[in-house]
Length: 362
Image 1: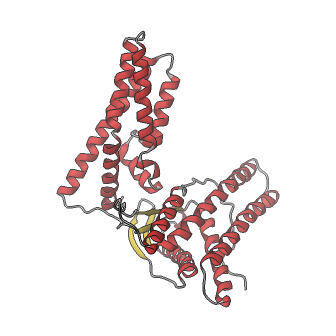
Image 2 (image 1 turned 135 degrees about the vertical axis):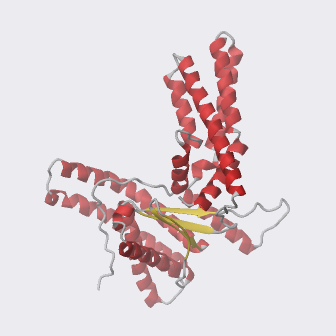
Image 3 (image 1 turned 135 degrees about the horizontal axis):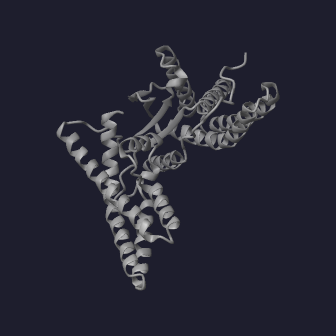
């Protein structure tokens, strides 16, 4: 875990908890539930409980935590123990109240524990931030409008070998360069911002145009992969029962055909929308994009993870008018942000099913 990134995450988390007043709202729910149990014949207590729950649920639904990247959520999970926030906490409280409708005293006991643990977690965050500040530990920040790609390379995939890790970083560079040339007309040198070692997690600074295409392409690949994942699980179940590989080959061919078709559509659309170079290079680049997206899809199937984080621009003043260029940039950032929120980590198990071609045909 990178301490500068942890510092950044804790600052965001502390601000979110403070602004949403989760601890206060939890206390109110606890109090009104206690009153209802103590005085069940007083209808006002039930009304107050319902109102306090509505406020708490709304705050949890609007929590910034819900839109954190998978790696940020993983860090929070590692340091928070049983504490959860956002939609996860709302679901837990809903489940507690539903399962203990006949025994509200047990529900109150569970709510009390959540409230106590949450307040202790909030205090721990604040104490840690004070300590990090006193030690002069910097925080990793993105400048307004800056975007980064998080790319997780599973240790098992590269067998902890430096040469294999080097090869995978080269593959990532290949993917980004093809997207970059398609949307900007040239390849770029990408800056590595951070490398985390729990898994090999690279944070790479990428431009807005590259981020926009990559986020939308990844979103579409993941949406398609969810369908393929069901096929993969079925194939693996058949193999587990002793069905020979020769009998499941048709399933694998079908799954690969689904993804191959989607990848070609994405590549063709990207070239049509963005590329302005000569036709000869256009065809080569479209093929390169197909190979790049094939590589990406294959790796998602093998447990790689992609995430994109972008820092929004400051809100314009009430009477401020943006220029056409500034408005285009703001719209692009909004587009990336919306797409990035739909990129989720899909946990894969068993033998991979995607074997899309990663070399151009001669």
